[in-house]
Length: 68
Image 1 (spheres, rainbow, N blue to C red):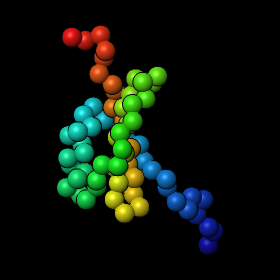
Image 2 (image 1 turned 90 degrees about the horizontal axis):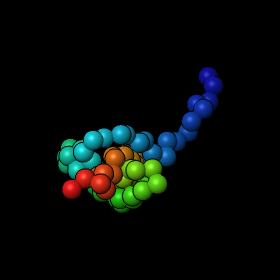
Image 3 (image 1 turned 90 degrees about the vertical axis):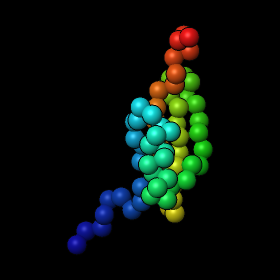
């Protein structure tokens, strides 16, 4: 039998419309917030959550700065 090509997944990214709502759902599964990073040049915000050795990155659009 051949060896698997991938031995480990570093993290999984998921595009979401409301990261706070999704984080609440994942918290019920044992995931805890790790960090948040604004990627302003891309218009995105990255929320990383994790449990044990599983990391998930939730990506959402930054609020439009032109909106009142």
